[in-house]
Image (cartoon, helix red, strand yellow):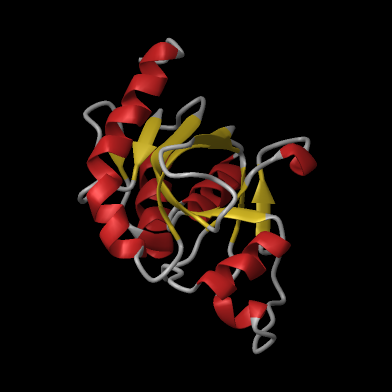
Length: 176
């Protein structure tokens, strides 16, 4: 089953689940209870902390939920903030999820130092729900922007092209 965030990021072949951590978790849970899939593939855009270039296509099965305050040493979490559907987490590109978009190059570098390479608001929730229901899952992302002061305007400029690239990638792989 193909899923996507929705709103301005919808595909005619994917079911939208909502934007952000909470909306996507609630809606995806509802969806898998009503119609349990054999596999979940989340398709969406991502911001780069600097390792990946704009319009790179990245596959991943690993996500984190690390907030800026944690990187600044002002917070901690008692829960596991990395989840993976992969047997080899060392070879994975880790996608960080938060309800906030990083707009600071210095903070972006701190994410990279922890092996977190991309930012997508929903992927952590997708993997958490998939794991809870025992459903294999993964994500396919196209980089639209760097996580810097121009993140939002660059995202808006590149989003439609990224969505075309994602669809073409799936067609070239024989998945559509």
